[in-house]
Length: 417
Ligand code: EPU
Image: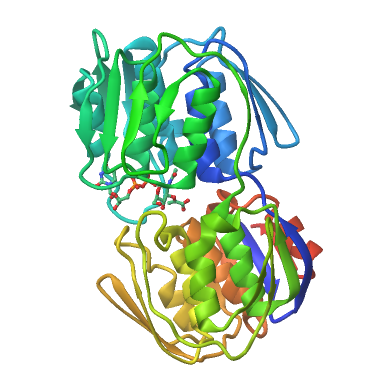
């Protein structure tokens, strides 16, 4: 197990450069295999989820070469095979291969995907899209056998704006016959990034970023060069860190528009932010005011920043409420934050935070990626020493974590026990 040893309450100064978006890259990589030609991705984050996708590609016979954040993917000699459960259960995004293999070979057999245990994460909406395009789905013991004589475009309304179902829908429709329209689609920037890449490859996708996306299928796709957009969740996490312990902490290589809801809420609380074209400079401020948030799909407050944001609310004066509308298990950081000195009560999907409280170091445990990020921020703010266990979760989504934090002055060490 990997652990983090952190001495907190150290002011952080300097610049943190944000990497490529995890949730974009994990969709772009499976989509590249729709073509038989090489695609080069740049600004690919150096995180463990990407290493797993690389293993899956290599298992399928795809040649992958990567060097300092760029990845060349050559599917010219790939084969359609059942991805071993031990790989597909490591991350949710493995099920984007369901769509790309189905689109390319009209047949895929795959296990139920993995992912952080943050709530029930069904895949019914993806299956609904596949069925609407003509696929037949057999399921036995969580293994899905999906085939289609041919895939034909259709009009589908998702029950909720699911990111995963929108990604899978776009991928599968890109090579289907005729026109597919997805209503109630997710609007996340990562969906736009996927459509941008596929359009460079020759796809005909319009409306990505809106709730209706139209895809006119094409017979084949070519390779392309594509630069992954910056990770808005990594950016938001470090901006919150700056509001906790920053002294002129600059977060660069970001698209502020992608985190507008976060920045607006932080400004309403009284955070000291200087928002530039592709960076934000933030200074800690002890006079923050309580605020309420509710998570929702983009452009609403992102569930992936809810847990890091709760850490900031601990130091804000008054009563804050946080309603988590996307996942029922995204309060698993709260018992540990309370152990560190917070006063937070959870009832169903609402957390009530009474502040301002100060934090002290403790031994805590990451239960999933963003819960881990929340505890990491708390540890960097707290007085004294904190040990965080199960750091593997955090390393799934934050590249060069130790290097980025130590470069701005944090006292943090990663150990293997
Ligand atoms: N849902 C269904 N049926 C489905 C799909 C989703 O009921 O077929 C429900 C889910 O249970 C959930 C909600 O709809 O309550 C949203 O799920 P969505 O499909 O939008 O999420 P996802 O595709 O599984 C992606 C990100 C998550 C992020 C969510 C929401 C990836 C690989 N994962 O998950 O990222 O929280 O969208 O924005 O893109 C993370 O990075 O820490 C993370 C968990």
